[in-house]
Length: 94
Image 1: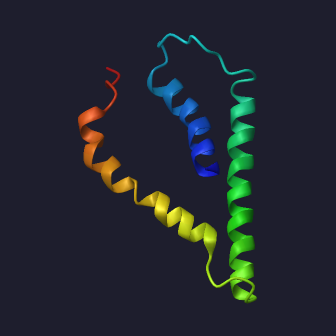
Image 2 (image 1 turned 135 degrees about the horizontal axis):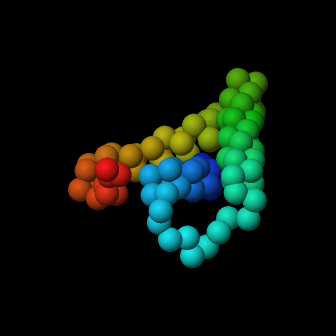
């Protein structure tokens, strides 16, 4: 779930760049600092979780690297996403 939280926060930057003149009914407090810090901490959390799971696997505490399995299961969603991406693209800036 943390990968999705970080991706959602990173999406703020992407949408602000792609649609700079779009109406903003909700403003992010402390933009761009707060979302940037959240994305950085989310990335650090994911890396530390992955490193801890790999360490547990190497030391024999676990027979499976749970975080890698979770990332692999999540990545299976990329296939349908890429299949329909071209049909639902945002309008391009001229």
